[in-house]
Structure formats: C-alpha cells, structure tokens
View 1 (tube, rainbow, N blue to C red):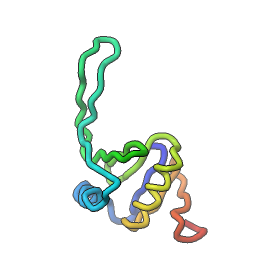
View 2: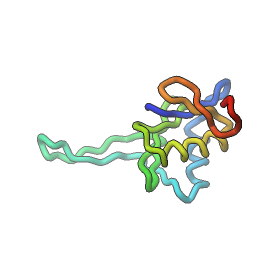
View 3: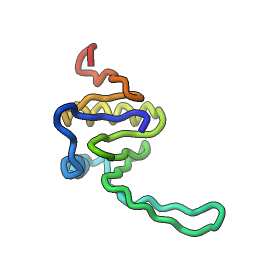
View 4: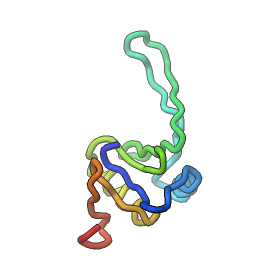
Length: 105
C-alpha cells in the first residue's frame, strides 16, 4: 500500500473495519476480486478479506492497516476521514502525513 492508515498501540481489527464499512453509505465490502487472465482468458477470483470499494476506487485492509495503491486525491481524502473516525494516523510510504486534525499530524 502506498498510502495507509494505522493506529499505533492498538491495531485496527478486521471486525472493527467491517463494522466501519457497514456504517458508511459511500463504502461497500467486496471481498472477492474477479478478473480475467489476459493470456489464458480464464476467469480468476481472489479472496481479499476487508477489501472495500467506493466510486473512487478500492480500499484494502491488511494486517491492521487500511490503505490504497496510487495517489488518487479522492481516496486520500477518504482515508483522512477514516483515520479521524478510527483515531488512526495516515502514512505515505512510511512517513506520517497530516490527517487534518492539526498541523503536526
């Protein structure tokens, strides 16, 4: 994940993340990613516990972190919102960035 949120000292659990997603109209769980192998044309399905989608893209849950790939401004703002609600911090490639709470974090 390029940009992710994490809660130092108390890991975000999959259960907690799923409860958060269930309470947000703009977000839905889609825990199975489906695609087609371009070489064989065979359908593939991959289970991804905690994967959530919205109109701006997908948000991945992995080992207590919630994050995105890439730098979509819309998804970064979504992560800021999630971080504030979960009492977490937001990181870009391991460096803490602002959640909008104050200038330091």
